[in-house]
Image (cartoon, rainbow over all chains, first blue to last red; front, side, top):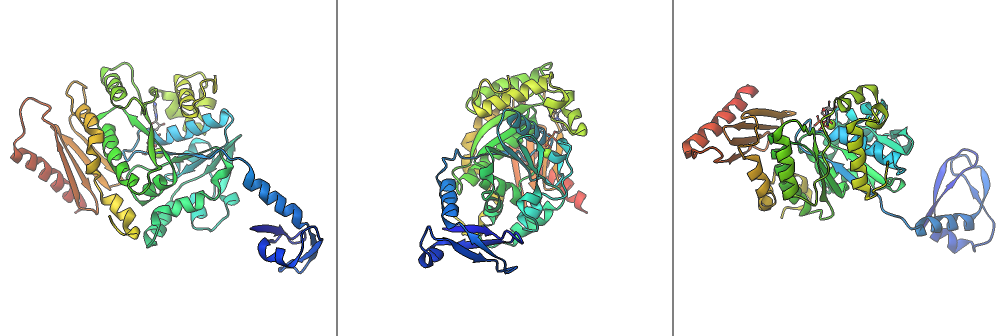
Length: 314
Length: 101
Ligand SMILES: Nc1ncnc2c1ncn2[C@@H]1O[C@H](COP(=O)(O)OP(=O)(O)OP(=O)(O)O)[C@@H](O)[C@H]1O
Ligand SMILES: [Mg+2]
């Protein structure tokens, strides 16, 4: 068991393997540590450190839910859904991390943030999680995407072993801080999307009720099969119809057919709403921008579906 | 099954055809004629996948992988001859190649 001891003078962190220390000192005895960096000597309360560590291990942990929002088809409402689902879950009191894996960086924009660093800097270990994750709202944190993610694709390509776990390796270390991790993906089907699906376990597919998005859904469901050969934990959980226009017949027919085909996945549709296209340019979620809108009601309904909490946000 | 290091490449190249049964119903829905769907749509995802829907023939061309998928639906009354399917697919591919020139 290893603990981190921080020098009270220079704040340098030292990793100490307790098993080797325990051989030398009996517990309960006062020991003095010396900082390898500034040479400062200070008392170390070994018992306290051990107990803290044990507590952390023993605390019952309800596991973090990791939801990938994805479909290779562009413009179906992935980012809109990621942002508003995250914001809604945060409003309902859950701790949420929104991860943007798109080079366009639209998720941050939608929440009115322009972080200087994000996922790329975290994956390349240029910066620490604290420097990359920004707090966007109460209960809501953001790990932004952006152009620098193209570099990540190169990092993934260069790996000769376990490249599909690149994202997991980094995010698994910090996701226990959150109740939900929501991952927004870019359109297309590439090495980063595969990484997202090896990290997350629940898949949410927004699908506009038109022929091309439906083709996209059909292709995606097969591709997910290829993923599942190696990663059984990743499962389709939600199909969210978007841009639902109730005035024309086509979308309603498609929706009722989808409900018959996939009753276990299909969610209440998100209706077409101008407010949803306006809100991002104000840097606001739908709950902030148009709390009384149909879109706000629809995304609240999605929050209830995802949390299995019928009274959430009522 | 591929070696570990090829998992991503394998997944990206796989068509997942063995899971086609999952989407049979969905594919039927896509090709229904009473949905008022537009007949011809051309899509482009970052230039990586090109999808063309023309007269109930759906063509997908993937960049880099040299993959082509053609789906045909006898949605309208007439049935498609092999020649017609090949023509549409070839035209789609030629269009694609022209763009790269
Ligand atoms: N239900 C809706 N009603 C009206 N407009 C919407 C709705 N959902 C999303 N939009 C708007 O449609 C556009 C595309 O949505 P969004 O950016 O969420 O799609 P996307 O799937 O993330 O796109 P991309 O694949 O490019 O990342 C945006 O301008 C968004 O504001
Ligand atoms: Mg997007």
